[in-house]
Image (cartoon, rainbow, N blue to C red; front, side, top):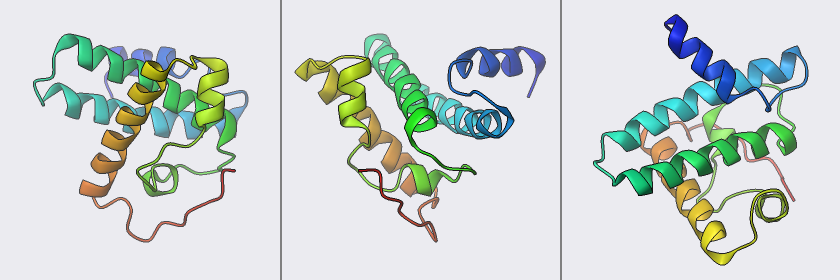
Amino acid sequence: MRDNESQELEDYIEEWHYDEPSYQFAKALGRYLFDFINHLRKQELSERTLRKHRDNVWCIGYLECAFGYQDDFAPGNVFYGPEPGYNYEFKRRFSDSEHAVNSYRTTWRKLYSYTKALGHLDGTKRHSQE
């Protein structure tokens, strides 16, 4: 990554980690989510829709780092199904409005589809979140 991109990633994941192992996980997850955001940009979405997805992606990353309890990042172990994890935590930390929750779920489904299309679900193990 170029210096500017590295700093952008560092700023993006600043609240996602608390020690070196969690930093490494957050950094790998952040890179994957940046790739997903770039994928969305190529889809000619409206700026408003893209902004909502970017905001939701940050929340997804934060929640996964705070509640996922994984040592190593593997996309299929995080985005293993079309239904989002951490619905309760999203509602508690960010918003419990129906619109916000539906938006969060839509972003998660797009992220799951992206992960599946890249073949990152192959050979992954689903972990229990609830």
